[in-house]
Length: 87
Image (cartoon, rainbow, N blue to C red; front, side, top):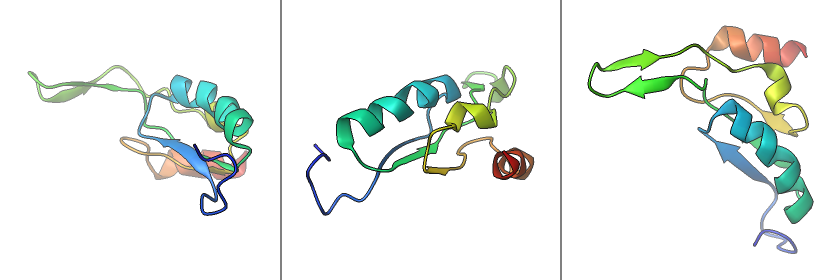
């Protein structure tokens, strides 16, 4: 949809598992020809019954390697963004 559209300046993924973002980045670039943005979440799960986060954060700077603009969404904090900026 975005390919060939001058009014679309970039494509991206947001609030998804870090592994899904890593797979989506090259695909988004290939099919759109546009710059790619990635803002994955931490990869932790939410237990709605217990009302708490489960698992551990799987956000790593290498998961968004290849994105032209990268950041984080749910449960990605300032320290994660600092590590991303230093890569």
